[in-house]
Image (cartoon, rainbow, N blue to C red; front, side, top):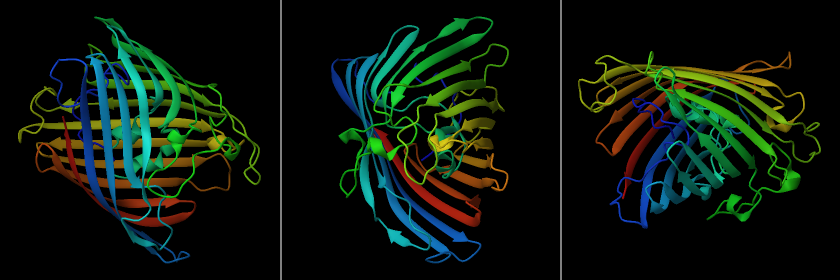
Length: 373
């Protein structure tokens, strides 16, 4: 799920750690953030598919983060997600099926004046399209570089100057989760095994990423830039999947908030508030899925218009392949978000997509309730 409220600048992938809604300032204490979503997806393929052209899927998507805070700047985080473990098959019509729970985070976070680190099972901070592009489906389309649930750690440092603003480099070391934390719960499923191959699945802390966030530039205060490089070491060779090789990602993105009233820190749910948020991200991937020669490129562009309780979004993601005979994949998506209250919102998305040579139309509806204590 994407938050789709795109009005506040990013304060850094790590230096602005998420904080639960209530913190009374007495430590140690505990907290909880959650969002509970019911989502319904409808897909219609342009051509006949094995199993049928129409696919329906209604399911919950419940994200919860528990906090054990030792101080304002140090805490243990435990995040879970309850949703379908596998996508539906072509032509399948299901309702609340294949639902299980996965653990996305179990980590220790510590922040200082100009630096921070996180260690444990966590999300490697690389890429923004999965969170910042509006709509319900972009996050799935770019999941190649959505490195959630890795084992390892990230160190981040913030430089600040009156002329350049905030420059925040971070270094991550990570490996795929082969432990029992990586298996699905409440349904049949197995944890990832080392012999399954794939990126970062080596059993060693030998994959790494270097990212730089540049924020709060005095001359252009609402421009946000990110660039970086990640190398996920190859796992074991798997019969029938080609020769393994390191997966390498080079990535750059830019996002700008143009507020019509010149103040993005005002009451964003006020009916008078309006802004435009263009976003672009380019990712060049060598050996996607750690398969030698499987080179791809992703280009995501989006435009969001926030108007009081409403948010309207247009997103285009294109995926091109280095293999000459392989046609490009794409996702075109139009989305509308209505904030019914400060805690309840309705998302509607519609669009077209092409994956593995097949065209289809998609429509999705999601109702989300968020809260915390």
